[in-house]
Amino acid sequence: MTLEERIQRSQTSIFKAVFPSTTNHYDTLFGGTAMHMMDEVAFITATRFSRQRMVTVSSDRIDFKQPIPAGTFVELVGKVTHVGNTSLRVGVEIYIEQMYAEGRELAIHGDFTFVALDENKKPTPVIK
View 1 (cartoon, rainbow, N blue to C red):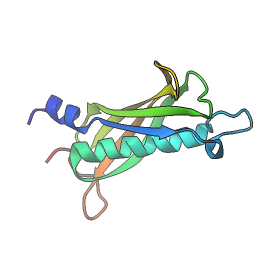
View 2: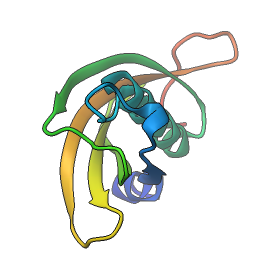
View 3: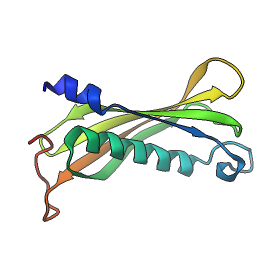
């Protein structure tokens, strides 16, 4: 399997509904909740790519482009954007969809870096 095929196969997409229990006093999604969901999708993407133990080592530049109101759907899309020796980077985007209307808009983008670990919790090559 080529690297590009592996990247395509590991792309991960998850939909969630934004309920009041996940919003702040402005009735929009908590930033920390969004980051939690993004890290989870990034982890799934990284693990699907490598099929090994992966751990988050950094999150870089999370851009909040617009608020995500309660009563909407969000789609989180994770895609491997860079592969190193023992690490890889996953870009995650969150799109907003209205529940009762067509269309979607990009709300948040962020990059997460993961390292592959062996059974002794030491860095190991991402691709074996």
